[in-house]
Amino acid sequence: RKEVEQDPGPFNVPEGATVAFNCTYSNSASQSFFWYRQDCRKEPKLLMSVYSSGNEDGRFTAQLNRASQYISLLIRDSKLSDSATYLCVVISTSGTYKYIFGTGTRLKVLA
Amino acid sequence: DGGITQSPKYLFRKEGQNVTLSCEQNLNHDAMYWYRQDPGQGLRLIYYSQIVNDFQKGDIAEGYSVSREKKESFPLTVTSAQKNPTAFYLCASSMTGVGETQYFGPGTRLLVL
Image (cartoon, rainbow over all chains, first blue to last red; front, top):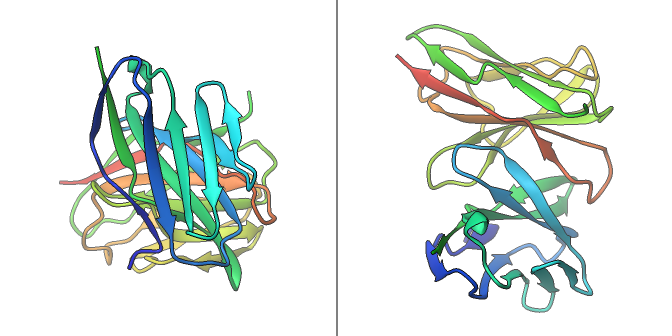
């Protein structure tokens, strides 16, 4: 089993739709969680950190479920510019802390 | 303008050749990282350094070497021992400490001739 797993997609949604991605992780000792956005042939860029209480940034909401070991990202009112690959990142602390990247979920927002 | 720079953007390697990818940051970050990204795979850690003059192997260090002589710089050499070097190479940096965010450079795309 991979340490971090994501549905690769693609998720094809119309403009204005709400879409949600999940990311599961296997190490219950994981401490910190992030969502990054990566455009085609570009570097990943931080979208948002994920806090235990859940957090929102405009149209984006991130949630953490420690009991079931997953994080989620909800995008409301999707824009064409949201089309990208969304990577979840988990920091595990087995010995030294380590950033573990999911393979990403591809989103295409259609006009 | 603070950030991470990588050069070159594209790099071509001939058989048996060593090539060096540059990574520089002016964010005053202590930790720096090199990742490799292949299509359909997540980022895989090659090497990381948490302090000057010290670095550690990541998950796929074979065929690669690094140095960390200055805080700002963390060059990666892809040696001839790396048999499948074609990939997108990403350098990142962060403050040290649990939960610190990593920031990425624009990447170098390495192709084998």
